Amino acid sequence: MPKRNHRKHNPLPLLEEIRSIEGSSPEAAMPDAASLCVLRVVPGLDGPGWTTLSLSHGLEHWCAVPLGSPTPRAELLAQAIGQLAENSARPDLHVFLRTEIERSHACSVPLALALIQPDVSRPEAALLQGLLELAQDLKRSFDHATLLGGNRLALVFSGASLHEAERMVGTILRRIRAQAAGNDTNDTEASASLLCSAGLAGYGGCVELTPNEFIASASVALEKARSLGGNRLEVAAPVDVCLASRDTLVHASEKHFLFTGKKAADK
Image (cartoon, rainbow, N blue to C red; front, side):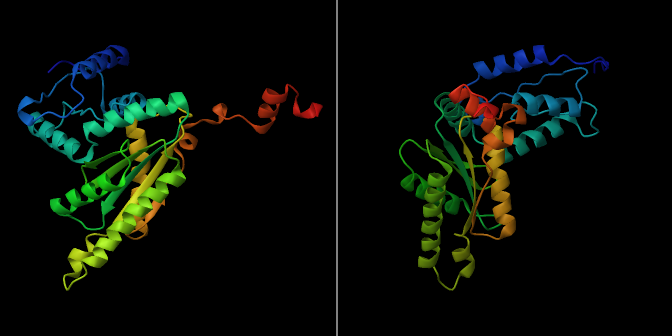
């Protein structure tokens, strides 16, 4: 094991290396037999340093393992990869979100992301597949739907405002409740399994945004819906407001000067 370097770590060469790996890797998911695990030892980079680096540059989908852990490194790496596969978003969702976020930022069109989760601890695969098929039938042709780790359904509504996306998600939840009522038998647990909670987040293209930040915003709204009681929809604050600093906001007096050429005191 190399000696630990306590000098300040320069992230630029590491970032360039990571970006080159991402650029040469396929966007679509590959079968396990064709997948690769890239190991890179970074002297002088500790856990807090990696956390700061990953949050600042959108590297949360990369897995980091401490060298000094008492757990055997191979076992720890296998656990981390398993956790990453379970909790992270599917690659196709990241690809679609990255494209739509760029389009939204360039053209100032709205974008919405909804996460829907059944109100049961361990829903069956058939139930999740049924929710996905229902979403595929109800969504528009240019929207996107996929299943995520953690038994969640992700729906991306391209060009849809929060109000429009809330209406569409409400339609899906009502259809799910209608199915639950239609299947109401003596097996109340099976009927209740069709009840879901949903979290919705919106983006207006005003600030820079990563797919992970967008997913995290919708996840917070979903957890709030589940904590307040199942079978409900919660809407997160607009991502633009959450990410924009006070320095980027234009005040009413500044808008008046931009449009009229006169200061507010000159009126």
